[in-house]
Image 1 (cartoon, rainbow, N blue to C red):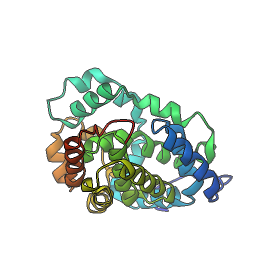
Image 2: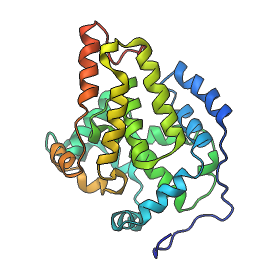
Image 3: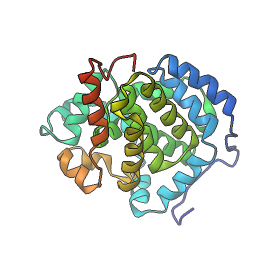
Length: 256
């Protein structure tokens, strides 16, 4: 992969594509968008070699190799809220901790959701598992950096961004279906397809977030970091929210 020593368990098998399984879990996710366990099931059923390819791309960069050398386990750091509250207002870390507390989330909670089921990725204690964990543990930080919220449309657009950065048919499928479900209930003027396209486009033009030193970003101004990483503002997403509200709809309603 690179000159850096990487260990992938030789007993690890590449997950085969299982579209029917993905559809079964998608129906459960549509019924309850907060059922995070279904997201992991769908991704495993459809992603195939995507994580392998993405890890190879990560390790081909000096920034990726630097993060790999540290092999930080992010959840305990991100769940230590007191020092994050002490960071300046408008900083990445302060914005993150306020978001997590407002939403009732924790990094450890996402870990617990992912570990409810063994899964192909989790079955081997190797470096690919570390990378898969890093992808998982940075998800809520992606919300902060991109400006996409935890409403159904925000999650779908963020998955579009994520797919452009990392690939994976499973991620793309959830993105497509999420946008489709919102479009069923949102006014046509909200132009939901444009929101999803914008998320994908922003993911293509931004620098790879997975390769960033997350700890070093925490004290820095969020606006400065977004500019440095070329993360474009989610204009279509914000406009869609405005349209929904003018029609008396709450973008964060379970009905959307």
